[in-house]
Length: 180
Image (cartoon, rainbow, N blue to C red; front, side):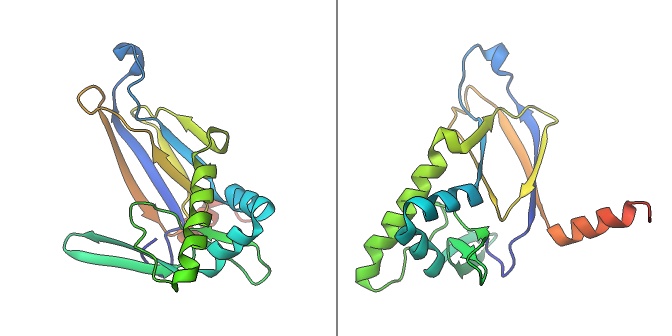
């Protein structure tokens, strides 16, 4: 999200997770995934003005890591010239305060709240507990992911993530296929 071209493929590998069957309770830490294109289409169908706000308002996402500040200014929903959704940019922890004329601030946050609520709707999510050895790979420009809260004194969870250029992945994959 913080570069000119977001990494197209993200992978999360579960290295450690407590066995919920051994614990006997659900202490949280479930991973969940949301199809951002589905949520964007829902917003366009049900709240077209809010869809327009999120496709036409560039906002800044920023993070500081290892003494470096990374940022990118881009709409939450990116569409092509035909209005087709191409990318979703959503991270409530890295969204900087919007820098808009005062009359546009409330419409932006209203639209942002609508899309966030739809993403949090259990019917929009696929959720499950990752177990050691699980690897999930997904389109980082389309699929949003998160986890439920958990008590680290009762549940251990360690995921290792990596990002890849999706074009490079598919190019290498095709190079391994037998030629026809």
